[in-house]
Image 1 (tube, helix red, strand yellow):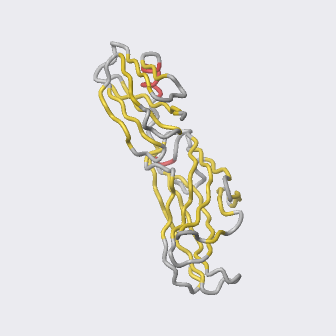
Image 2: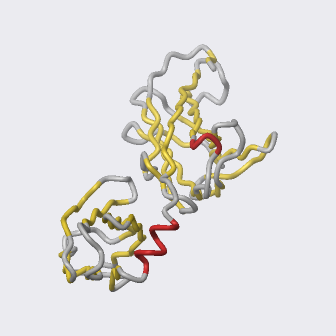
Image 3: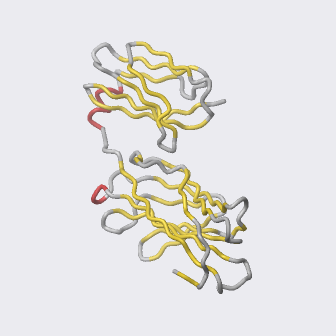
Length: 222
């Protein structure tokens, strides 16, 4: 869409990892970046491989929801002025348990405006971001759930991980909610992981072994 403007900019979805877990809540910040535009707004939807609604959007700070043609859209409840080249809005999205074609795609747009109260001289930029839905591991989870313990939850300085002796070649990975790996190591039967330098918040712990894979969401309090 173009309204005659020539503003340049980019869109980021902060808090949305490249691989998402099934049936998981993500708090996402829509960031419109422009060093030239004065005022901005946005709209976003999420579709699966059949171009139908994927997961569930929920309004957050400065946003509201609308539905059209069976699809959900989250958008600004009011436009914002750019500050230090950014305008941001927050919304929530709960991933689906499954997705048609194993495809999840976010389509977003942001209006870059001159703030004169009209549309002349404004223009829009767009985003299409595909993410991967992690394969369900229910069978493996059932095996490992009773043989792996991660505690305490919430944790503060030390995270304990115990692994039954029957579990072989176990490793651990810890990811923040942006999907960035911040820790990995092999596991013995009893393990203590120093998390004293981690920021407070939600993390994903993934245990891999020959017997399967187990993912757990943990909370670190500071």
